Image (cartoon, rainbow over all chains, first blue to last red; front, side, top):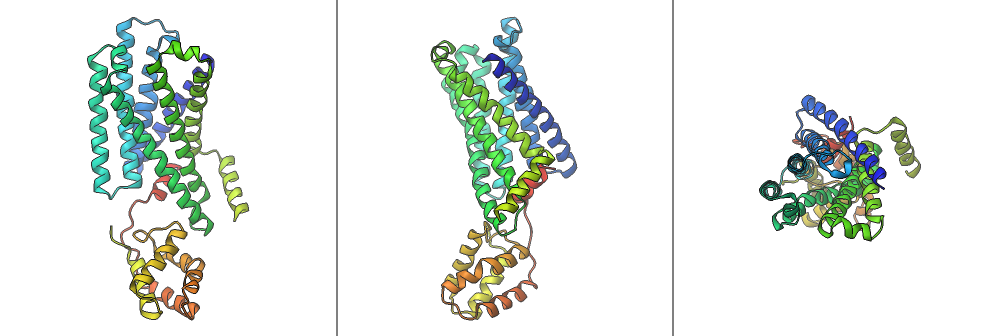
Length: 248
Length: 100
């Protein structure tokens, strides 16, 4: 089971690194805020933050002194949090850029996420992970993914209507679905990880292997869906276009 | 956010040249746009032409509007004089860019 988690972690890291660099390069060319925010989110949170946490995790087999693992965890959590702040910015700038109330909510969420890091930096890791401030921050972090998932899946429905009239590109329409799936899988992964933290690894082991299986499967689905969304192989694009032609 | 000039133009023609009043014409066009997955505030002229051709005829006929073809012809002519207005970065254009 650890092997499955290891493979899914590597897939996730590789996807975040490649997609992050690719989207930041695109942002340098287009000067677009959404691609800048999504690229920063991939690179800071999905790659660097996750990498630090993985290296610091004793299960990774790297025997590091406790202060080093604690520092890696704190840095990792901070980077993941900053990454999720960029996810909020991406969703706001992509789906509701003109709404001042959504801008206010986004900025509030970012302040809440950053403030919740106080728990990570001011207590031991064991204390921090069950502190109300950290858990509140975790809820806000997940809120960004839930919001992104709902917006993307809703827009996919809208795009399907346009597609039926020949007003949309099938690959772009499918991209909303894939990104929604990636966000959904990310939510399930984060929730499973949170349950493991709250209820303890030993209790989870007592439940059998299923929590690890859930974690491994959904932690793999998310980067694969993101890859197909933002870096679609030619064969996949042809399949999506062919399916759209058949359906019309 | 204000409705697009394209939307306003179509509604004005329907109100002026059919039996529908202002509220009915705006509601009918909004329903047609929703059916097409479009919004009144961002619809472009080219998108509206497709809606006029594929969605609106049935909507107008179901409301008892006479001579739908002539009415839509007049609407398309009026659309030719309207610019779509400022085009914001829509979710569709953002996601199109992200795929490279």
